[in-house]
Amino acid sequence: MLILGLSALTLSAHAAWSITGNTSLWYEQEKLTFNLLPSVTYSINQTWAVGSQLGVKLLYANKMTTCYGVVKPYVRYTVWHNDVIYLDLRGQAGVSFDNRLQTVEMGIVPSLRVKVADHWSVKFTFGLLGATYEPHAQPSAEGKSQQWSGGYKLNAGDASVGVTYRF
Image (cartoon, rainbow, N blue to C red; front, side, top):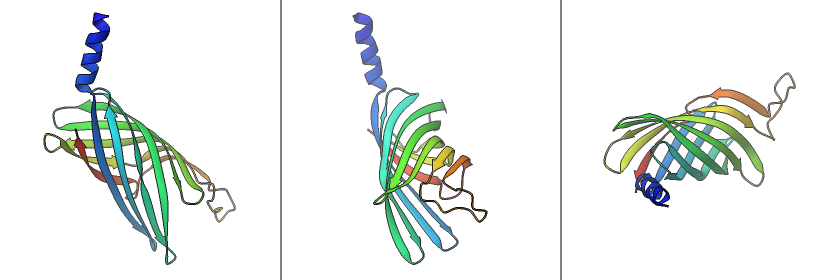
């Protein structure tokens, strides 16, 4: 019983909530994409955390603006850290939707956090290593399905910067 009590105290000493606001902007061939993805994270200890992003993706193409909802629950593992820099891998499964499902993605997102003050840090994310499913994607010029894609996806639209406040 004493060991369980001490374990609970140790766990709660490292447990903390944090909020992050991530954003990205990407322009390519008359198509503009803007993401605003705030997230809430619960750090279980110095290595593991769970959380979710809930935000919007705005797409401007063909003189029309489309707004998508985005939901991305995740588990974060801190690979390495010192007093200022944290290297994380985030396993996530996410969906984006408007009046119908637009994209499903699963994979690992590498990120770097830099502590700038007691409760504040800046976070940089770098793409997605995994798979993406787009049920409404148009076939390629060869007539092949473009619905499934996989691998490491990185362009400026997949990289983001955010600010984190840890309570």
